[in-house]
Image (cartoon, rainbow, N blue to C red; front, side, top):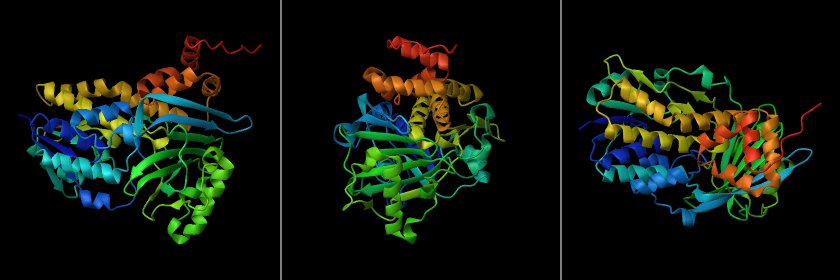
Length: 413
């Protein structure tokens, strides 16, 4: 029976560990924080889980927050500018958002209860060879730190060298949820985007505001202004920016109740979207496989990163259960089986980070008039490979629109 070592206790590492423990495979997860430290720490993200990820949770016996109670049904789109667009798309199967300070500790507890070995220790790149000697396969699921250097960057899938958004996400009180309950995705051309997400946290349902701010735009200040320096000034700035750039959310603010939930319920920063090699051969001859952020760093603009990591973990688990060894052929099989979904998520997100191409504006305009189009576009947040096949080129988008009865775009003469 194989013995698997996993570096990292995020969604990818934990779901893979749980999947393998269902089949009594020995698994050790190495991480640098205890579940208690995660639970009591700063906000980690504003992750939403889409239907395929929730289905994997059900299969693993860790769907602790039933989507019928904690989920949402819709995406509400607002595209500002000279001629604003506003439309709604509905999911066939609901999504949900649970604070990872609840989610990760609960999955960690389940992993240990089911016989998984959790090792709390700070690892460096020099530790990987001794770890490889203890295990048949090392899976690297920690996106930060020294281990990323094991997997070279793939420039053909990594079009950006600098962050395309300056991020600010916080959990707020005093915002009435949308009707029907859902995520609001608002775009202020030239300045950035807002994802307003109904999230379940320690204090109950709150509203996550993820500001995706374009460097140099009017909203960038939200990524650098420190809440702790002057909470009232920070919250006033948030309200002012909502009023100016994201009116669909601003109109549902209760000004008497609005505020950041707690000082630790905010996260600011930036990241460079990056795709790295799928695996690395270690000096001793064994292999390390990358999953999650260490494989694909995806901007949170479309909420694809955690769902991509979950998919990658599941595919990896299936391959471990059915394969005969953990050589390069094994790694290549995993890479091939996850490529469409994982790279679809990365490429679709990278496209949406750029100034909107004409074929995307045409698609948005069509969705504004055609609910079936908007519903399919929304459903494809569950299936980024399908979405990428629609938006990758103008020709593909036109074919998609034609399938829905939209007349061809007029040809310039």
